[in-house]
Amino acid sequence: MSLIVQKYGGTSVGDLDRIRNVANRIAMQFAKGDDIVVVVSAMTGETDRLVKLAHKISKQPNQREMDMLLSTGERVTIALLAMTLQDMGLSAQSFTGRQVGILTDDVHSQARIEEIQADRLREALSQKIIPVVAGFQGINRKSDVTTLGRGGSDTTAVALAAALKADLCEIYTDVDGVYTTDPNIVSSARRIDKISYEEMLEMASLGAKVLQTRSVEFAMKYRVPVCVRSSFNDHPGTLVTEEDIEMEQELVSGITYDKNQAKVTLIGVPDRPGIASTIFEAISKENLNVDMIIQNVGQAGLTDLSFTVPQTDAARAETILSSLAKEIGVNKVKITENIAKVSIVGVGMRSHTGVAAKTFTSLAAEGINIMMISTSEIKISCVIESKYTELAVRTLHDAFKLGKDQKAKSETI
Ligand code: ASP
Ligand code: MG
Image 1: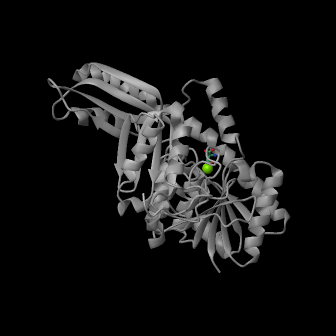
Image 2: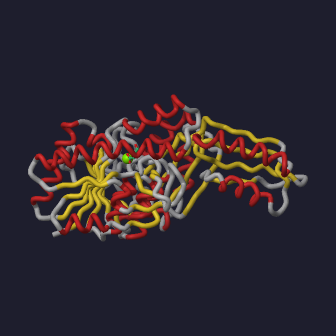
Image 3: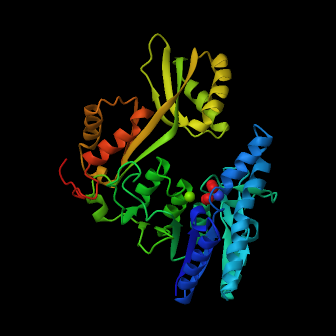
Protein backbone atom coordinates (compact mmCIF):
# COMPACT_ATOMS: atom_id res chain seq x y z
CA MET A 1 0.00 0.00 0.00
CA SER A 2 1.32 3.41 -0.96
CA LEU A 3 0.44 7.00 -0.19
CA ILE A 4 -0.02 9.00 -3.37
CA VAL A 5 -0.72 12.70 -3.74
CA GLN A 6 -2.62 13.37 -6.97
CA LYS A 7 -2.92 16.92 -8.25
CA TYR A 8 -5.40 17.77 -10.98
CA GLY A 9 -4.93 21.02 -12.90
CA GLY A 10 -7.59 23.42 -14.19
CA THR A 11 -8.28 21.71 -17.53
CA SER A 12 -8.61 18.32 -15.82
CA VAL A 13 -11.46 19.70 -13.69
CA GLY A 14 -12.71 22.18 -16.34
CA ASP A 15 -16.33 21.00 -16.36
CA LEU A 16 -18.56 18.48 -14.59
CA ASP A 17 -17.79 15.65 -17.03
CA ARG A 18 -14.11 16.19 -16.46
CA ILE A 19 -14.63 16.26 -12.71
CA ARG A 20 -16.40 12.89 -13.07
CA ASN A 21 -13.48 11.58 -15.11
CA VAL A 22 -11.10 12.67 -12.35
CA ALA A 23 -13.31 11.05 -9.71
CA ASN A 24 -13.17 7.78 -11.68
CA ARG A 25 -9.38 7.89 -11.79
CA ILE A 26 -9.25 8.49 -8.05
CA ALA A 27 -11.72 5.66 -7.42
CA MET A 28 -9.62 3.27 -9.48
CA GLN A 29 -6.45 4.10 -7.58
CA PHE A 30 -8.29 3.87 -4.27
CA ALA A 31 -9.66 0.44 -5.20
CA LYS A 32 -6.06 -0.79 -5.49
CA GLY A 33 -5.72 -0.17 -1.77
CA ASP A 34 -3.61 2.99 -1.91
CA ASP A 35 -4.12 6.01 0.30
CA ILE A 36 -4.77 9.08 -1.80
CA VAL A 37 -4.66 12.79 -1.10
CA VAL A 38 -6.13 14.88 -3.91
CA VAL A 39 -5.14 18.48 -4.65
CA VAL A 40 -7.07 20.51 -7.21
CA SER A 41 -6.78 23.79 -9.08
CA ALA A 42 -9.62 26.10 -9.96
CA MET A 43 -11.64 25.16 -13.07
CA THR A 44 -9.98 26.30 -16.35
CA GLY A 45 -10.05 30.05 -16.79
CA GLU A 46 -11.61 30.71 -13.40
CA THR A 47 -8.57 32.36 -11.84
CA ASP A 48 -8.11 34.54 -14.92
CA ARG A 49 -11.79 35.49 -14.77
CA LEU A 50 -11.43 36.57 -11.16
CA VAL A 51 -8.27 38.56 -11.92
CA LYS A 52 -10.10 40.42 -14.70
CA LEU A 53 -13.05 41.09 -12.45
CA ALA A 54 -10.78 42.68 -9.86
CA HIS A 55 -9.08 44.82 -12.49
CA LYS A 56 -12.45 46.14 -13.63
CA ILE A 57 -12.90 47.57 -10.17
CA SER A 58 -9.40 48.75 -9.42
CA LYS A 59 -6.21 49.38 -11.40
CA GLN A 60 -4.08 48.12 -8.57
CA PRO A 61 -6.26 45.91 -6.42
CA ASN A 62 -5.18 45.43 -2.83
CA GLN A 63 -3.10 42.24 -2.63
CA ARG A 64 -4.76 40.93 0.49
CA GLU A 65 -8.21 41.22 -1.10
CA MET A 66 -6.86 39.74 -4.30
CA ASP A 67 -5.82 36.58 -2.44
CA MET A 68 -9.19 36.40 -0.76
CA LEU A 69 -10.81 36.58 -4.18
CA LEU A 70 -8.54 34.18 -6.08
CA SER A 71 -8.65 31.52 -3.37
CA THR A 72 -12.37 31.04 -4.04
CA GLY A 73 -11.69 29.33 -7.41
CA GLU A 74 -10.18 26.28 -5.73
CA ARG A 75 -12.97 26.15 -3.14
CA VAL A 76 -15.49 25.51 -5.89
CA THR A 77 -13.57 22.53 -7.27
CA ILE A 78 -12.84 20.85 -3.93
CA ALA A 79 -16.53 20.91 -3.02
CA LEU A 80 -17.70 19.68 -6.45
CA LEU A 81 -15.12 16.89 -6.58
CA ALA A 82 -15.83 15.76 -3.01
CA MET A 83 -19.56 15.61 -3.83
CA THR A 84 -18.88 13.60 -6.98
CA LEU A 85 -16.77 11.09 -5.05
CA GLN A 86 -19.44 10.85 -2.37
CA ASP A 87 -22.10 10.17 -4.99
CA MET A 88 -19.98 7.27 -6.20
CA GLY A 89 -20.16 5.81 -2.71
CA LEU A 90 -16.67 6.83 -1.58
CA SER A 91 -15.84 8.73 1.59
CA ALA A 92 -14.33 12.05 0.65
CA GLN A 93 -13.99 15.41 2.33
CA SER A 94 -12.93 18.81 1.04
CA PHE A 95 -10.33 20.95 2.85
CA THR A 96 -9.20 24.53 2.38
CA GLY A 97 -5.57 25.53 2.85
CA ARG A 98 -6.42 26.80 6.26
CA GLN A 99 -8.08 23.56 7.35
CA VAL A 100 -5.01 21.61 6.27
CA GLY A 101 -2.72 23.99 8.16
CA ILE A 102 -0.70 25.32 5.23
CA LEU A 103 1.12 28.20 6.88
CA THR A 104 2.89 30.74 4.69
CA ASP A 105 4.77 34.01 4.95
CA ASP A 106 3.02 37.36 4.41
CA VAL A 107 3.83 38.00 0.76
CA HIS A 108 0.34 38.15 -0.73
CA SER A 109 0.05 36.65 -4.23
CA GLN A 110 3.56 35.13 -3.99
CA ALA A 111 3.53 33.52 -0.56
CA ARG A 112 6.01 30.81 0.41
CA ILE A 113 4.97 27.83 2.48
CA GLU A 114 6.69 27.85 5.87
CA GLU A 115 5.00 24.97 7.62
CA ILE A 116 2.41 22.29 6.96
CA GLN A 117 0.52 20.84 9.90
CA ALA A 118 -1.66 18.32 8.04
CA ASP A 119 -3.19 16.81 11.19
CA ARG A 120 -6.62 16.75 9.61
CA LEU A 121 -5.27 15.00 6.56
CA ARG A 122 -3.65 12.31 8.67
CA GLU A 123 -6.86 11.89 10.59
CA ALA A 124 -8.92 11.61 7.40
CA LEU A 125 -6.50 9.09 5.91
CA SER A 126 -6.65 6.95 9.04
CA GLN A 127 -10.41 6.77 8.56
CA LYS A 128 -10.09 5.85 4.88
CA ILE A 129 -11.51 9.19 3.84
CA ILE A 130 -10.12 10.71 0.63
CA PRO A 131 -9.12 14.31 1.39
CA VAL A 132 -9.65 16.78 -1.46
CA VAL A 133 -7.45 19.80 -0.82
CA ALA A 134 -7.64 23.27 -2.36
CA GLY A 135 -4.35 24.02 -4.11
CA PHE A 136 -2.64 27.41 -4.39
CA GLN A 137 -3.70 28.72 -0.97
CA GLY A 138 -2.55 28.95 2.60
CA ILE A 139 -2.82 31.34 5.52
CA ASN A 140 -0.29 33.61 7.14
CA ARG A 141 0.27 33.88 10.91
CA LYS A 142 -2.63 36.33 11.17
CA SER A 143 -4.90 33.75 9.49
CA ASP A 144 -5.29 35.91 6.40
CA VAL A 145 -5.62 33.94 3.18
CA THR A 146 -2.50 33.94 0.99
CA THR A 147 -1.86 32.46 -2.45
CA LEU A 148 1.31 30.84 -3.73
CA GLY A 149 1.70 32.48 -7.15
CA ARG A 150 0.11 31.43 -10.44
CA GLY A 151 0.37 27.70 -10.95
CA GLY A 152 0.78 27.31 -7.20
CA SER A 153 -1.35 24.17 -6.86
CA ASP A 154 1.66 22.19 -8.06
CA THR A 155 3.54 23.48 -5.04
CA THR A 156 0.69 22.63 -2.69
CA ALA A 157 0.75 19.06 -3.99
CA VAL A 158 4.50 18.51 -3.76
CA ALA A 159 4.72 20.22 -0.37
CA LEU A 160 1.93 18.00 0.96
CA ALA A 161 3.66 14.94 -0.48
CA ALA A 162 6.84 15.99 1.34
CA ALA A 163 5.03 16.69 4.62
CA LEU A 164 3.15 13.38 4.53
CA LYS A 165 6.20 11.47 3.24
CA ALA A 166 4.14 10.24 0.31
CA ASP A 167 5.59 7.62 -2.02
CA LEU A 168 4.72 9.58 -5.14
CA CYS A 169 3.25 12.90 -6.24
CA GLU A 170 1.33 12.72 -9.51
CA ILE A 171 0.70 15.97 -11.35
CA TYR A 172 -2.19 15.47 -13.77
CA THR A 173 -2.45 17.95 -16.59
CA ASP A 174 -3.56 18.15 -20.24
CA VAL A 175 -0.24 17.05 -21.73
CA ASP A 176 1.45 13.65 -21.52
CA GLY A 177 4.46 14.87 -19.62
CA VAL A 178 7.51 17.05 -19.95
CA TYR A 179 8.65 17.55 -23.56
CA THR A 180 12.05 18.32 -25.06
CA THR A 181 10.49 21.63 -26.05
CA ASP A 182 7.07 23.18 -26.66
CA PRO A 183 5.33 20.81 -29.12
CA ASN A 184 3.33 23.79 -30.42
CA ILE A 185 6.55 25.16 -31.85
CA VAL A 186 8.38 21.96 -32.77
CA SER A 187 6.05 19.17 -33.85
CA SER A 188 8.80 16.56 -33.46
CA ALA A 189 9.31 17.42 -29.76
CA ARG A 190 9.68 14.26 -27.70
CA ARG A 191 8.24 13.35 -24.33
CA ILE A 192 11.01 12.81 -21.80
CA ASP A 193 10.64 9.59 -19.77
CA LYS A 194 12.83 10.62 -16.88
CA ILE A 195 14.40 13.92 -15.92
CA SER A 196 16.52 14.97 -12.95
CA TYR A 197 15.29 17.44 -10.33
CA GLU A 198 18.04 19.85 -11.27
CA GLU A 199 17.19 19.87 -14.97
CA MET A 200 13.49 20.20 -14.25
CA LEU A 201 14.19 23.10 -11.92
CA GLU A 202 16.13 24.92 -14.64
CA MET A 203 13.50 24.14 -17.26
CA ALA A 204 10.64 25.34 -15.06
CA SER A 205 12.40 28.54 -14.09
CA LEU A 206 13.47 29.18 -17.69
CA GLY A 207 9.97 29.03 -19.11
CA ALA A 208 8.65 25.45 -19.29
CA LYS A 209 5.17 25.96 -17.92
CA VAL A 210 4.35 22.40 -17.01
CA LEU A 211 5.36 22.73 -13.33
CA GLN A 212 5.59 25.73 -11.02
CA THR A 213 9.27 26.31 -10.22
CA ARG A 214 8.67 26.37 -6.48
CA SER A 215 7.14 22.88 -6.65
CA VAL A 216 10.33 21.50 -8.19
CA GLU A 217 12.40 23.15 -5.45
CA PHE A 218 10.29 21.29 -2.89
CA ALA A 219 10.57 18.02 -4.78
CA MET A 220 14.35 18.34 -4.97
CA LYS A 221 14.80 19.37 -1.35
CA TYR A 222 12.63 16.60 0.07
CA ARG A 223 13.37 14.03 -2.63
CA VAL A 224 9.74 13.55 -3.63
CA PRO A 225 9.37 11.57 -6.87
CA VAL A 226 7.03 13.54 -9.12
CA CYS A 227 5.23 12.14 -12.12
CA VAL A 228 3.79 14.57 -14.68
CA ARG A 229 1.05 12.92 -16.76
CA SER A 230 -2.23 13.47 -18.53
CA SER A 231 -5.61 12.97 -16.89
CA PHE A 232 -7.09 12.24 -20.33
CA ASN A 233 -5.16 9.06 -21.13
CA ASP A 234 -3.04 6.35 -19.53
CA HIS A 235 0.40 7.26 -20.81
CA PRO A 236 3.05 6.86 -18.12
CA GLY A 237 4.17 10.51 -18.27
CA THR A 238 7.51 11.93 -17.17
CA LEU A 239 9.19 11.01 -13.90
CA VAL A 240 11.09 13.80 -12.16
CA THR A 241 13.63 12.08 -9.97
CA GLU A 242 17.27 11.66 -8.89
CA GLU A 243 19.92 12.07 -11.56
CA ASP A 244 21.36 8.84 -12.98
CA ILE A 245 24.15 7.89 -15.37
CA GLU A 246 21.79 7.53 -18.31
CA MET A 247 20.72 11.15 -17.99
CA GLU A 248 24.31 12.34 -18.13
CA GLN A 249 24.83 10.69 -21.49
CA GLU A 250 22.19 12.93 -22.95
CA LEU A 251 23.95 16.10 -24.01
CA VAL A 252 20.94 18.37 -23.87
CA SER A 253 17.61 17.42 -22.32
CA GLY A 254 15.40 20.31 -23.28
CA ILE A 255 15.01 23.73 -24.84
CA THR A 256 12.84 26.35 -23.18
CA TYR A 257 11.87 29.88 -23.97
CA ASP A 258 10.41 32.75 -22.04
CA LYS A 259 8.86 35.72 -23.76
CA ASN A 260 7.78 37.30 -20.52
CA GLN A 261 11.12 39.06 -20.11
CA ALA A 262 12.27 42.65 -20.28
CA LYS A 263 15.77 44.07 -20.33
CA VAL A 264 16.59 46.91 -17.98
CA THR A 265 19.68 48.95 -18.86
CA LEU A 266 21.21 51.57 -16.62
CA ILE A 267 23.41 53.85 -18.67
CA GLY A 268 26.19 55.87 -17.07
CA VAL A 269 26.40 54.19 -13.68
CA PRO A 270 29.12 55.53 -11.34
CA ASP A 271 31.82 52.86 -11.29
CA ARG A 272 32.61 52.58 -7.59
CA PRO A 273 32.09 50.07 -4.77
CA GLY A 274 28.62 49.93 -3.28
CA ILE A 275 26.64 51.13 -6.29
CA ALA A 276 25.56 47.70 -7.53
CA SER A 277 24.53 46.69 -4.03
CA THR A 278 22.43 49.86 -3.66
CA ILE A 279 20.68 49.16 -6.95
CA PHE A 280 19.94 45.50 -6.34
CA GLU A 281 18.94 46.02 -2.75
CA ALA A 282 16.32 48.55 -3.85
CA ILE A 283 15.02 46.04 -6.34
CA SER A 284 14.96 43.03 -4.05
CA LYS A 285 13.09 45.03 -1.42
CA GLU A 286 10.25 45.21 -3.92
CA ASN A 287 10.38 41.43 -4.49
CA LEU A 288 11.44 41.82 -8.10
CA ASN A 289 13.12 38.81 -9.65
CA VAL A 290 16.35 39.77 -11.37
CA ASP A 291 18.29 37.55 -13.75
CA MET A 292 21.19 37.76 -16.20
CA ILE A 293 23.12 40.68 -14.80
CA ILE A 294 25.78 42.10 -17.10
CA GLN A 295 28.13 44.98 -16.31
CA ASN A 296 30.30 46.49 -19.01
CA VAL A 297 33.93 47.39 -18.50
CA GLY A 298 33.99 50.87 -16.95
CA GLN A 299 35.30 53.90 -18.80
CA ALA A 300 36.00 57.31 -17.33
CA GLY A 301 34.44 56.33 -14.03
CA LEU A 302 31.15 55.26 -15.60
CA THR A 303 29.77 51.92 -16.64
CA ASP A 304 26.56 50.40 -18.07
CA LEU A 305 24.59 47.74 -16.25
CA SER A 306 21.92 45.51 -17.80
CA PHE A 307 19.73 42.81 -16.37
CA THR A 308 16.46 41.05 -17.10
CA VAL A 309 13.24 41.05 -15.10
CA PRO A 310 9.86 39.43 -15.83
CA GLN A 311 8.00 41.73 -18.23
CA THR A 312 5.17 42.01 -15.76
CA ASP A 313 7.62 43.66 -13.35
CA ALA A 314 9.23 46.02 -15.88
CA ALA A 315 7.07 49.04 -15.08
CA ARG A 316 7.73 48.67 -11.36
CA ALA A 317 11.47 48.28 -11.99
CA GLU A 318 11.43 51.47 -14.06
CA THR A 319 9.67 53.42 -11.32
CA ILE A 320 12.03 52.24 -8.59
CA LEU A 321 15.16 52.77 -10.66
CA SER A 322 14.20 56.15 -12.06
CA SER A 323 13.97 57.64 -8.61
CA LEU A 324 17.12 55.83 -7.47
CA ALA A 325 18.96 56.99 -10.61
CA LYS A 326 18.68 60.59 -9.49
CA GLU A 327 20.00 59.76 -6.02
CA ILE A 328 23.10 57.87 -7.11
CA GLY A 329 23.79 59.71 -10.35
CA VAL A 330 22.85 57.23 -13.09
CA ASN A 331 22.31 58.95 -16.47
CA LYS A 332 19.47 56.94 -17.91
CA VAL A 333 17.17 53.95 -17.27
CA LYS A 334 16.07 52.12 -20.40
CA ILE A 335 13.54 49.27 -20.67
CA THR A 336 13.51 46.96 -23.70
CA GLU A 337 10.44 44.76 -23.87
CA ASN A 338 10.60 42.85 -27.15
CA ILE A 339 13.12 40.28 -25.97
CA ALA A 340 12.98 36.59 -25.20
CA LYS A 341 15.19 34.21 -23.33
CA VAL A 342 15.94 30.91 -25.05
CA SER A 343 17.72 28.28 -22.97
CA ILE A 344 19.18 24.85 -23.39
CA VAL A 345 19.31 22.59 -20.35
CA GLY A 346 21.07 19.31 -19.67
CA VAL A 347 23.18 17.66 -16.98
CA GLY A 348 25.30 16.23 -19.79
CA MET A 349 26.87 19.67 -20.21
CA ARG A 350 28.89 19.05 -17.08
CA SER A 351 30.91 16.36 -18.76
CA HIS A 352 30.83 17.45 -22.42
CA THR A 353 32.48 20.42 -24.03
CA GLY A 354 31.42 22.42 -27.05
CA VAL A 355 27.77 22.89 -26.16
CA ALA A 356 28.09 26.67 -25.91
CA ALA A 357 29.98 26.92 -29.19
CA LYS A 358 27.36 24.81 -30.95
CA THR A 359 24.56 26.94 -29.53
CA PHE A 360 26.09 30.22 -30.66
CA THR A 361 27.07 28.87 -34.10
CA SER A 362 23.58 27.51 -34.73
CA LEU A 363 21.94 30.80 -33.83
CA ALA A 364 24.46 32.78 -35.88
CA ALA A 365 23.79 30.59 -38.92
CA GLU A 366 20.18 31.78 -38.79
CA GLY A 367 21.24 35.41 -38.41
CA ILE A 368 19.97 35.63 -34.84
CA ASN A 369 21.82 38.17 -32.75
CA ILE A 370 22.53 37.30 -29.11
CA MET A 371 22.11 40.25 -26.74
CA MET A 372 22.94 38.62 -23.43
CA ILE A 373 24.26 35.25 -22.34
CA SER A 374 24.23 33.50 -19.01
CA THR A 375 25.36 30.03 -18.12
CA SER A 376 25.38 27.61 -15.25
CA GLU A 377 26.86 24.14 -15.08
CA ILE A 378 23.77 22.69 -16.73
CA LYS A 379 22.24 25.49 -18.80
CA ILE A 380 22.99 28.16 -21.37
CA SER A 381 20.53 31.03 -21.79
CA CYS A 382 20.58 33.60 -24.57
CA VAL A 383 18.54 36.77 -24.78
CA ILE A 384 17.44 37.47 -28.34
CA GLU A 385 14.86 39.63 -30.11
CA SER A 386 11.49 38.07 -29.37
CA LYS A 387 10.48 37.81 -33.04
CA TYR A 388 13.17 35.13 -33.47
CA THR A 389 12.01 32.96 -30.55
CA GLU A 390 10.34 30.19 -32.57
CA LEU A 391 13.17 30.07 -35.10
CA ALA A 392 15.77 29.87 -32.33
CA VAL A 393 13.92 27.08 -30.52
CA ARG A 394 13.52 25.07 -33.74
CA THR A 395 17.13 25.61 -34.72
CA LEU A 396 18.52 24.50 -31.37
CA HIS A 397 16.14 21.54 -31.05
CA ASP A 398 17.39 20.39 -34.42
CA ALA A 399 21.06 21.16 -33.76
CA PHE A 400 21.04 19.00 -30.63
CA LYS A 401 19.01 16.27 -32.36
CA LEU A 402 16.24 16.20 -29.81
CA GLY A 403 13.41 15.32 -32.20
CA LYS A 404 11.44 12.07 -32.30
CA ASP A 405 12.83 11.16 -35.68
CA GLN A 406 16.39 12.08 -34.83
CA LYS A 407 18.85 10.06 -32.83
CA ALA A 408 17.94 10.62 -29.20
CA LYS A 409 21.54 10.64 -28.07
CA SER A 410 24.23 12.55 -29.86
CA GLU A 411 27.54 11.43 -28.47
CA THR A 412 29.55 13.68 -30.71
CA ILE A 413 28.96 17.35 -31.21
N1 ASP B 1 -5.67 28.49 -9.97
C1 ASP B 1 -4.34 28.98 -9.84
C2 ASP B 1 -3.86 29.53 -11.17
O1 ASP B 1 -4.60 29.52 -12.14
C3 ASP B 1 -3.40 27.98 -9.28
C4 ASP B 1 -3.17 26.77 -10.14
O2 ASP B 1 -3.92 26.50 -11.06
O3 ASP B 1 -2.21 26.03 -9.87
O4 ASP B 1 -2.78 30.00 -11.26
MG1 MG C 1 -0.31 24.50 -13.81
